[in-house]
Amino acid sequence: MGNERMRELPAAAVAPDRPTGPGAPVTGAARRRLRVRGDALRALVTGRPVSLYATSVLRIGYGLLYLVFLLREFPHRHEIWGPDSPWTPALAAQLLDQTGWYSFLILSDSRAYFELCYGAALVTSALFMLGWRTRATSVLFAVVVTSFHARSIFMTDGGDNLVLLMSLYLVLTACGRRWSLDARRTRNKAARAAEAPERARGSFTQQLRAARTTLTTVVHNCGVFLIAAQVCFLYGSAGLYKVQGSFWADGTALHYVLHLELFQPWPALSHFLDQYPMVIAAISYLTVLTQVAFPFVLFGRLKYPVLALLLGMHIGIAVLLGLPVFSGAMIIADAVFLPDRFYTSLPRLGRRTARRFGVRLPRPREEAGTGSVPPQGRPEAPSPRLPA
Image 1 (cartoon, rainbow, N blue to C red):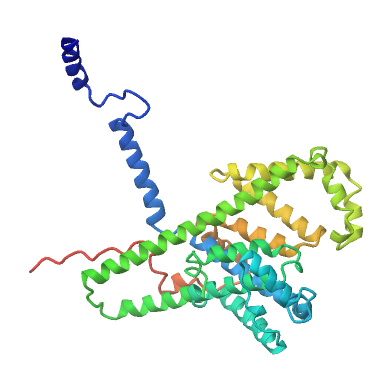
Image 2: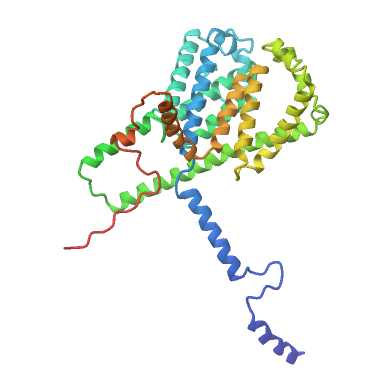
């Protein structure tokens, strides 16, 4: 036994890296592949902020949508959120104690206090839409949406639920770097800095700025991922729930929806469309197929026709069912899946269309020579100068 054991030891020492079980270490090639993938993922998360134009579209869209929503409900504000609401501040306070939400509207029953809060909400929505001091106004906008939603959660149609989620996610993003007053101020500051002599900064200051840029980039990219994941979850879960229903399976779900009196802003239009059962069945099946397939087509060109179908579906929901806030919130959320090159091509497309109709537009800001937005990635350290 001793000799056999001694003969077995060199055999094990010849190939120490050979895997002998499920817990064996990975080979060198697999380790290199994991390292390459990890470096690619790290570069994607920390290299540069993604979808800056898309998040700016979300900022403009949700700020404008909530501003219009508050203006639309301005004549009914006291009955929905104010002192005259059936859902009294005492009931709202009891619900907030159970849910853990917060609303500054229940701090006082004074009518003057409510009017002041409503005016502040209108101003905050407008400033957030314009992108003025976006870091601060995004937080204020999230507080406004959360407070109005939690104050009277049973008095709205539920279309503001997605606006609430997106307002919280947009706090994490750098949604003010494009198409905003902040971007204009940064552009003017860069133009003035280009004319002034550059000050020498110490290594610690440069490292601190680099760390701040990296942290902002990581938080922004994680916020964009949360927005995209939220939209995918909404579409996927909605499609899977529809698959389980018998009315969607036989294509008659929209027939019954069009006969709901609560969702008939134009009854004549609903009854007119209900006269075509084959069209109703085709739209029902296409709706389920599009929602279920949406999370699986995001990384290919098939997502563009799917997004076009979803746009038509939400427009139909807004017109036929009278749910404009919900449809608007979904349409704006879908904008996060369009690449930045799509948004940068819109001005060129607009100028080309204007020239066809004989309309002369001013040149873009970059061509006019007023500077451009500085790069948003990691700042590079200046190269050391060699002594003369």
